[in-house]
Image (tube, rainbow, N blue to C red; front, side, top):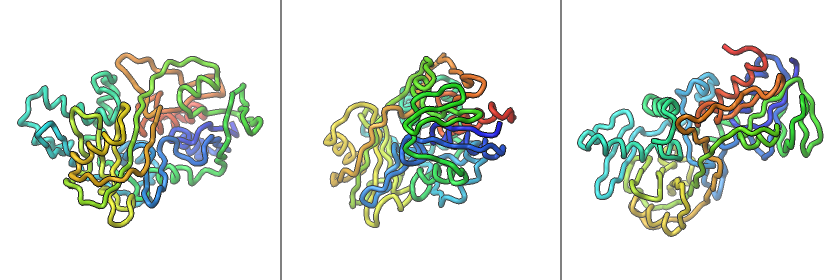
Length: 349
């Protein structure tokens, strides 16, 4: 095999392209949008850095660690403390040192941690596969996540930096044998990696892989008032808000000098007025300005208990990659990309 086409420049596609390039294969990456990263991208809006959906990067993920990119990114680790607001009570909790919660019942502790992991899975944790849940929970308990100072999109850019041929505004419409057809015409290669969502892969290959995706909305607001807590994340229970994160307290570069930037996640339809009312309760100020909002229809794969694993190889020359094949995480996306490339090059270790 001398050449390969990778469809999609998200984390799965970039990791597949990097692995193939390292094996001496000529790689062309086709991306429909105007940038790399897929769901791991950032926008600059009126001086504020807004990630497309609140997310952090965990350097302890094996796939992230093997890139050796974190030391190059001015990486800002998060304070491990988070604040759980439970009615009139409030707990300041470290994920790996949940001492304040020992004074609650086991049932209530489980409920409170479920509130946190709802924001991780964007779904009720009780419905998630036990294997998936344990893997993701372990990464939070023993890792030290954070963000690049200039936004999570910097990680995606760094992943793509060594790739010679990444083409934007290239929409692939179908795959036929070893050819891809789209708004650019036809391109041929010895092998193809389809690093898209499961829905797009179904369309390109005329397949039916059952899949479920969780949706979410991330709201960005700013205030010049001081915030009421140094904890970077607040989790209000029994609220339309899943979590609210003072992202500029992780990296000051996210907001202009003198301003705070807060990212808030919801799973259901909520009005702007209701969000700001909740933010006033969470952060101790009612003076908020709306920066932007991202409605992310396919935020994460929903991997329920007993859900089937889709195929990886569609044909001798076509393989699939994406977090829906592994874990609903950056680790899952990057692992699937590497495994797809190794499936083609027979380098799997």
